[in-house]
Figure 1 (cartoon, one colour):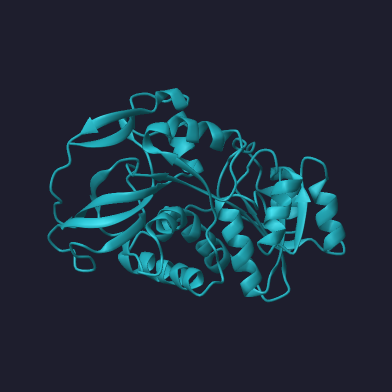
Figure 2 (cartoon, rainbow, N blue to C red):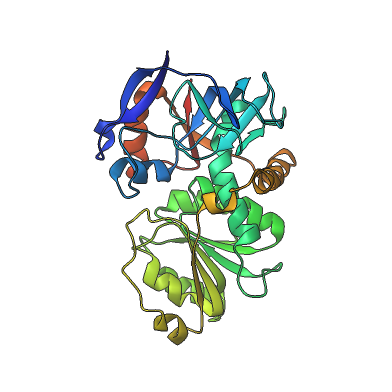
Length: 327
């Protein structure tokens, strides 16, 4: 028996229950992993609340690190005793031990701690596909301006550092002066407190009226309309979350009137559908972290029994950087 967090119906943090579950043996293409640390992400809130509908009862959690305890038939990239980390479907990382598909589980370099491994996989791989694979027409080059909302969050702080390493001028938004200062300290070229400043006006001012080549937006409804207006002609609006709620439906013709701009809705799990793509992206992330280009900030730590409070703090925007659950 092992401890795991489940919900039996969608709702608030009070629906999260810590229960005893049985863990079996891995089948073909699967592994059994004993967790050392678990990551917390906003997608967990979407799944708990019902924004993303999944069958019940549901085990939550999308990323973790630990030690491989058993390997199923056909798994060749991992062996018993390996240190490993993952961001993967199906959900279920809020637990001490689990059986899961091996495809997205990667061997964790010895230079990266279990805590960092649990904090960095989903958020770091998200930053990787945004900055390296979700690009405007003609790509990005050193000196280009990009706008990144929620720049003091887990994905945002990684993106600030990585964008600086790539030579981009990242304009980061956040909801307080303290969070703006954190984004600035992590490589944002410019920061905007969207609660006290008009971020559209500031973006136009910073870019000399030209706008940015790409907006990376995980906020959704609250930033949507002005984000579109921040784009230069042929710019790219890259949506990857709805922390403030889903934007209103939009007629395609509006993209034309705003400068023939592009719109895409991205998810990490489209990018890690194969073992090869997952490993390629993970290797890029591991190199960025071990080289010192990117530091993973773990600013909050909770026990598994306190998972409901972790969700409350995340939804209340009380967190910065990454949050982990320790075991």
